[in-house]
Image: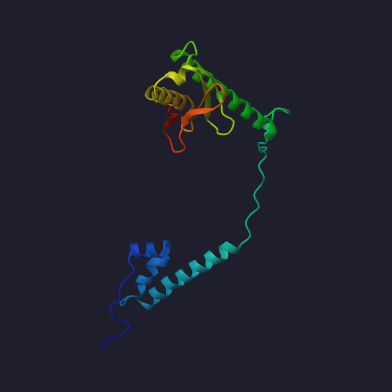
Length: 197
């Protein structure tokens, strides 16, 4: 018959350190068969004490932190009075910059057209369209109507390609004769069309 005085396992140094630092994990090892009742009570007691200290610690009043003596930076720290702009002023400047960029792009496009047709026999003028953003409206001269369909299509494709290179992805063209009749341009789903005689 076995008695309580039988040989019991001793809590090793590593297990003791584990129980002290992380009782959630290591206290349970002492519940195995062979550890003394005293070792089990001490390790589980420490686990319960650890939990209670954690709960109480969260409910204790926090110490009041002293406010720092350094001032918090504000807008006045970085900007002089009158230097800040209103939202309307910023919007107006952005629109002005965008309009300047649009004009520059159109001027570049007109310069490119003049290199191809310096006398303006085929391509008279170019301006921005009123309905679609990125649309260039090109007025063609009388010579346009005398050229073959294939030549006019190639010219229109070159014009559209040049405008897309200058303006970007949303570039479209509309070709008008001197009377304002549409004779070609960018198709709705892409590509170029010209009026067939």
